[in-house]
Every structure is written in C-alpha cells, then in structure tokens.
Image (cartoon, rainbow, N blue to C red):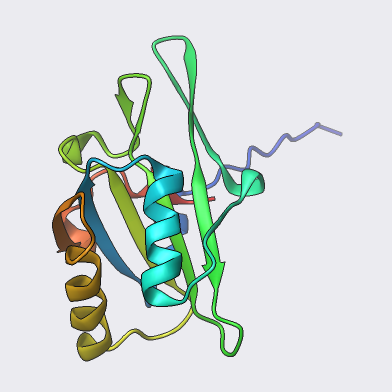
Length: 149
C-alpha cells in the first residue's frame, strides 16, 4: 500500500477577494500621530476607535518583522466595522504602492453608500492636520493580502 501525501495551500488571492467583498477603502495623508488622529475622529464623528492588538498586521521583509497597528470601531447597531491601519512602520509600508499615504481606512461587513462615504470624506478633510482623503478602489491595490487579518 503506497502512502500518499497531500499538500494543502491557501490561495491568498481568493482569500483577499473574499475579504474585500462589500468594502470601501480610504487613503489618508495626515501629520497626526495615530492616537491623535483617532481621538479627532472619535470626537468629530462620534466613533470609538480603539487599537486592536489581536489583528495587528505583521510582515516579514528583509529578514525583519514589521508591525502595523490597526484601530477598530464597530457600529453599536448593525454589522459595519471600521478599521484604521497605519501604513508605515520603521521605514516599511503596509501597501508599498501607496507610500504617500499615512493611514488606510477600511469599511467592511456592510454596505456604505456613496452619500455616506462623501459625507465621511468631507468630515475627515475638515480635521486640522489632514491633507488628503481619497477613495482607493480594489483594482488599484497590488498588495491586498497585506490588509487581511
């Protein structure tokens, strides 16, 4: 009787595609530190962003580990989750194709309509220290799997 071994592998592209279903993603340029930015968002938008160490993103590049913190806020009613990622840690970038962005804001698990998104973008732009807020489409993101937790 011959022994068979099966090798199972995850398809990261399929995983990323599933993760990004019904999501909206904003790129933000700001001079504010992450905790200051979250404090501003919490006060302006009535949110409660908190750092979530359980979903911190760890990347291994150049034989070194890099850690990208993620702040999370879930609406009390409904299923919409907000995730605010730091895009830079110690000279490395979570999404290298967007080195100019400081933060990535992912809205996931529920539909965010264009009107609501436009209102949010306008509010975020009004924060002192925020220089740019832009919506990123999934097609423009080369390293989507870096955002999957």
